Structure formats: C-alpha cells, structure tokens
Length: 145
Image (cartoon, rainbow, N blue to C red):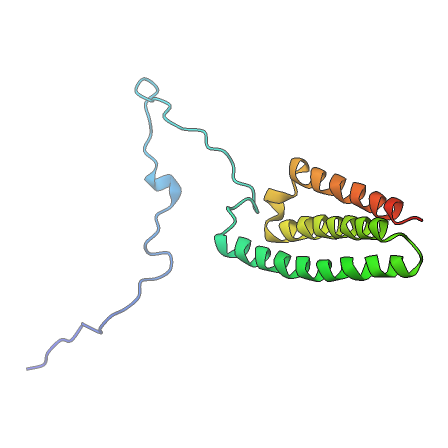
C-alpha cells in the first residue's frame, strides 16, 4: 500500500519558465499580405507627467504663507524708508513694489518646484522674471527722496 505522493504542494515556476524567446513568438510574414498598421505616438518626456492636484495645493499653501510674510516685510520696508525721511506715499509705493518683486520670484520658484518640466517653459517663466525685474527697479526708484 505504498502511495506514490508526487504532489509537493504549491511551487513557483522558474523565473524564465513563463517567457519564450522573442524570436520564437514572431511569425514570418509574407510580403504580399503584410500591411503597415503601426501608429506613431508622441514620446513622453521624463518629467512631463501631469501635476497632481495635491502638488498644486501644497504649492498654493506655500505661496499663501510666503505672501503673508511678504506683506509684513512690505510694511517694515515702508516704515524703514519713512524713518530715513522718504515721504510716506513714496515709501508705501516702494513697499508695494517690493511685495510684487518678492511675490513674483517666489511664484517662479514654487512653480519650478511643483513641476519643472511643465512650468520652466520660457513662455511661463519669462514674464514672471520680467515682472520681478521691473518691480525691483521700481522698488529702488520709488524709494528715493
């Protein structure tokens, strides 16, 4: 009554057991019946994936915190100019231009951190840098006596 127990339970196949060589799966095609049905797809860049809404929300939250800090820096800069005998209306204008400068620079940095492949395009980052440079110049020009 000796039973031949060949069932050893569950066994994983060898790593190459399920794969067949690529040459073995290809079937020879006859030139008369072959039609070209390939489609051309656009290549996807390595970092050009869509930005998730979570990333945009985190970036927006960071910008909000920075804008609040820049608002207080604007007031401090305007007060420092008034102490240096700059008229209050010019000091206030210089403070606002400082706010615009800091806000545009931080917006560019946050956009680059969120998705550099998408937002570092010249059509997006160029105007942001142009506004920043203009605001920097106007900060110092309007802050004179």
